[in-house]
Amino acid sequence: MPVFVASRLSGDDNMTMPDRLEIDDFTGDVTFFKCTPCGYQKSVISRSKIASAHIISGLLFAYIVIESIGGKTITLGGFRKKDARAALRLLE
Image 1 (tube, rainbow, N blue to C red):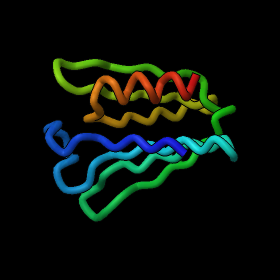
Image 2: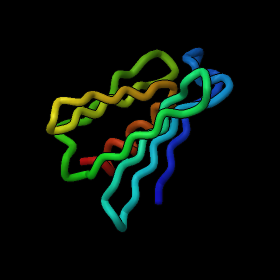
Image 3: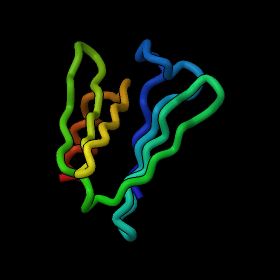
Image 4: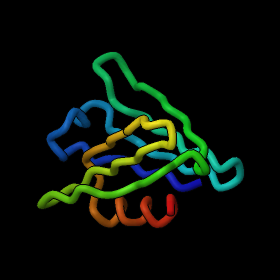
């Protein structure tokens, strides 16, 4: 199961608890852990319910933006560009 963890140096709210993206090959679920002041906000979505996924690339780090069929948008930030591209390939 590939796990992608954001960099703590990205300047986003990732210093204490970085964003994390897990893609489960067996169940087809994609799990998002978004940093909050009190811990993590966990969201799980089936890969079949993903409408689109794209990357917003900055100078050093990238954001992964995933939109579900129901209209929910999840944005995770602070990933190395190489990791963001690898996650996008797995989501397509």
